[in-house]
Length: 78
Image 1 (tube, helix red, strand yellow):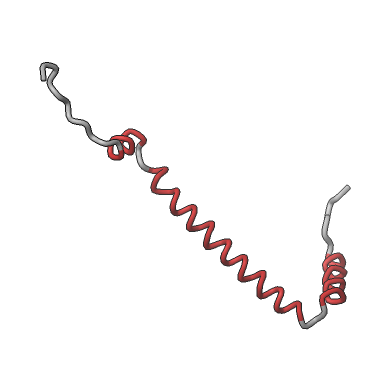
Image 2 (spheres, rainbow, N blue to C red; image 1 turned 90 degrees about the vertical axis):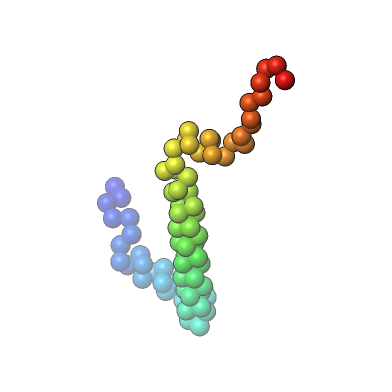
């Protein structure tokens, strides 16, 4: 049924419609802005992934032992 959803003539039709709607002068600026946005999104996603990686590799028992405050044991008689 949908063997090839997007064929080359579909892309040509989309490009022609975009040029007619937005004009040829605005398209490069829009593409530049889209490229910047994609780079920012990619760098933020990578930073988020890098932030989560060390926490996932740390053993849960050692993580809770190092973050829990220590309490000193007091003798029962005092």
